[in-house]
Amino acid sequence: MKSSIARTICFAAVLLGLTAVAAAQGHRACSSASLAGAWGYTETGTVMVPTTTPPTPVLGAAVGRYDFDFAGTFTGTQYSSAGGTVSQDMKVGTYTLNSDCTGTLTLEVYDPSGTVLRRRSVWAVVLVDNATEFRGIMTSMLAFPSGATLSPIMTLTARRLFPRDRGDEQ
Image (cartoon, rainbow, N blue to C red; front, top):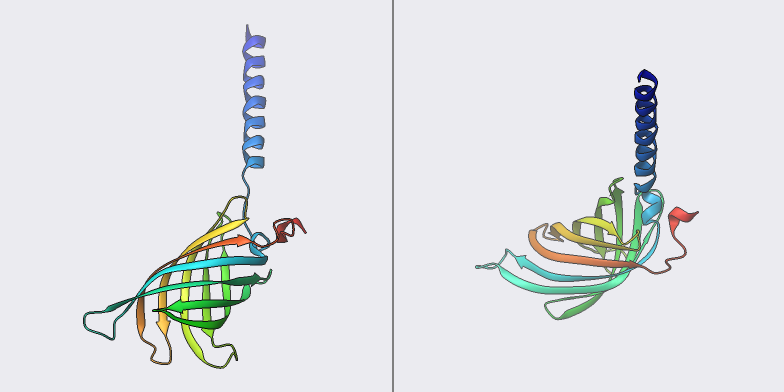
C-alpha cells in the first residue's frame, strides 16, 4: 500500500514537472530583436488643435516606413496629410519593448531636409501575429515651433516588410 502511494506521488510529481516545462516552452517573450527590421505603416485619426475656440479637429493620415535597430532607436520616412495638406516627413526616435510584447515609441518628425522639427509624439504599441505586425495608439503630441500640447486620437498599424528577415531569427 505504501509503495503504491509513493509511486502515485512520484508519478504525479513527474507529470506536474513535465506540464510546467511544456508551458514554459510555449511562452514566447519579445525583445528588441522582435522589432528590429523594416516595417510599412499607416496612421489615421484626428488631432484636436487647442489654439482655436472651440478646439478644432484636424483629420490626419500617414503612410510610411520605419527601420528599427537592435539598440532601441529607429528612423522613418512618411507622406502625411493633416487637414488636407500633404507633406513629406522624416522621423527619428527611440523605443522600448517589454517581454510581453508591449512597448513605447517616442519620435520626432522633421521636414525632408532634417532641420525643422514639426512635432514630437509618443505611441503605446503591441506586437501581434508572431511579431509580423504591430498596432499602436498615440498617447501624446507636441506641435513645434509653438510647443502646443495637442490632443491626438490617432492609431497606427504596421506590418513587417520582409517577414523572413526577422531580427529575432539572427
